Image (cartoon, rainbow, N blue to C red):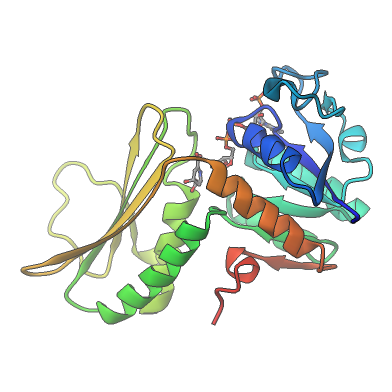
Length: 269
Ligand SMILES: NC(=O)C1=CN([C@@H]2O[C@H](COP(=O)(O)OP(=O)(O)OC[C@H]3O[C@@H](n4cnc5c(N)ncnc54)[C@H](OP(=O)(O)O)[C@@H]3O)[C@@H](O)[C@H]2O)C=CC1
Ligand SMILES: O=C(O)C1=N[C@H](C(=O)O)C[C@H](O)C1
């Protein structure tokens, strides 16, 4: 069996390490490279040293070295890092799974443009459960279109640098789309002081940061005399890693194009 060659960016990060472990445990995949940045812990060391079972791949900050021979780069870093990797991958026909969140509109446009040169899966949450939750939210929003106030509450660990989470924003986009609204026009990101009564056309966001919470998302549909809560809670990062591997395998059959986890999991339609 020929193995799909996977490079991992941010190899020493929380997700990077999960991904190194997941690739090492997958018979159909081979770790071909590992990227870090100058000053990263573990630069120059074996990417799988933390597992006590070396992979024979050293973490490097040199893109040409880290991406040598790779079929797919899996990138969970920061927007500025992902955009550098994207440019290199597009120029060299390396496919990309992008899990990084926190992109601005220009960053998202750069990803869309690069997908004309290579195949990309870009999704703020790779877990099966979250993507099924997105489908449930679409249905709930359509059924509760009037008389229900919509609030999205997310909680993550103390190290997370972007807010609201990419997943919360995606939930907002899905709900706004189902209601025929534009999230840019109806989102309210936090409240303070004398805010006035709630505008029923808005979608509110609330962010909690603390400890080692891996990722909790709840959407509240608050009506009169009842409320509905749709929640997803992650208790491990393994689901994000396994979803990323499914995305990499999906890309093996694509030449160019921008895809998301609905495409990978056949949840469209
Ligand atoms: N789509 C999904 O399913 C999920 C998405 N995420 C997203 O993935 C991203 C990473 O999360 P997490 O692993 O927790 O974060 P970490 O901070 O643990 O890891 C980030 C990694 O990227 C490296 N890095 C930082 N800046 C750059 C840069 N400019 N260029 C290249 N590499 C860089 C870091 O190096 P160093 O250690 O030296 O700082 C580190 O190795 C976040 O955007 C997060 O929201 C997270 C989980 C699931
Ligand atoms: O930073 C994280 O940890 C996570 N980030 C993603 C996001 O911003 O939605 C996905 C997941 O919630 C974990």
